[in-house]
Image (tube, rainbow, N blue to C red; front, top):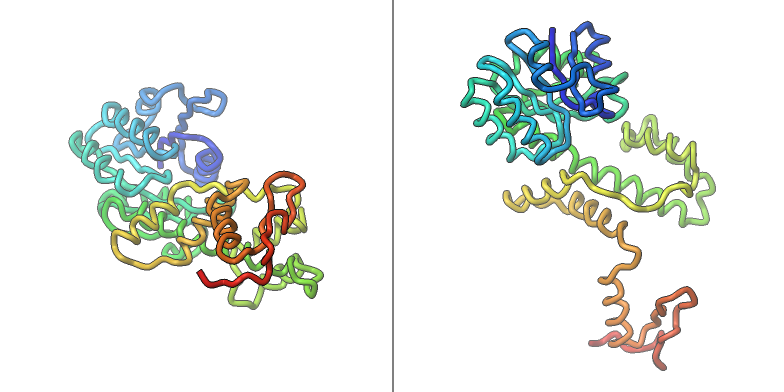
Length: 314
């Protein structure tokens, strides 16, 4: 099967390789000419036979919306566009409507697998009509892991369902990662556990917390047992925030995912203004020890005469 692929970064480039290895003809476009097969979206469209299937793997937001808008002018009735990036699901209906006005189909597909997907396959969650899903199924089958289709691919529902499912998937990922990280930190703080990486590796088989994420943590600790080469700064792609916003809209409690997202926010603060306020309040009402700012600050620097014994009554 032929497919056009727009965006040949870490994910898109590996997807092109996996599809070609499965025998599909891939025509790739990327702004970087050294990795592209064609020099423009017009050339990409001209290189494909109708009905064309074009997969978009570019950053979410304006880059994806702009690409879809261009494709609405470049492609023809009967063609199909698949957005496989991390777009917010609320973008999918407007994209589908824009393309439908020209007779062009639209599928949104959440893709999970990262840099490992080239060899292991990608978990796919697609939203769209039965007709459009069927048209692209040879591509989905080539990208997903080997084995039963239902263990690597889901037709999640109508347009928007694929990205909504991927949003929830990433929210769950936040919570799992945070739980593993907190367990790692607690064992490191203990005097009893002398081989933290060994314990975590021992969880890899036969325990209820085993997972691919745990295997990746084992790999990281094998290379850097104390993770001393890393800074504790964690960004977020936006999908954790979107998950929580949807939870609020639907009145669904997500305490674990919410806490994991806020922990990422905390990781970006050299000093927390909120915790400074907590320290100031404890000192004010109870005379508890506080630490002065600056390199020589130490607990008790600004402690009052009742520090350590002050009343905790407000």
